[in-house]
Amino acid sequence: VQLQASGGGLVQAGGSLRLSCAASGRTLSSYAMGWFRQAPGKEREFVAAIAQIGIKRDYAEFAKGRFTISRDNAKNMVYLQMDSLKPDDTAVYYCAAQSSSDIFTLIARESEYTYWGQGTQVTVSS
Image 1 (cartoon, rainbow, N blue to C red):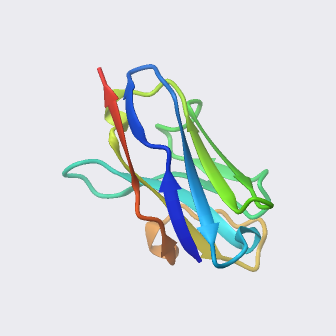
Image 2 (tube, rainbow, N blue to C red):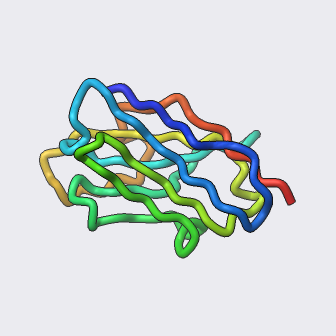
């Protein structure tokens, strides 16, 4: 499966962005999905995950209450709605996919994902 992340940009603190991850090659309905981010000089970190069955979701502590992950399997899309953005949210955001036979699987570990998008830059100004 090929992943294409988009929707990043420059936004002021307190603003919102919606990232999108488009999949091609395979239907996303068979994949657990996740978003990660990497800030300059830092390691890539987990942001959010969503199971094949979209009602199961997991978030990093910094994302809880501000970010929302969702998916539309019919459109082969995964989204990350980011609200109340802070300068610390500045990073390159990546979407990731991992096939799973368990529709309830949530994956928060970077090493467990096989497929990655190219990343989209999010810059939050103060």
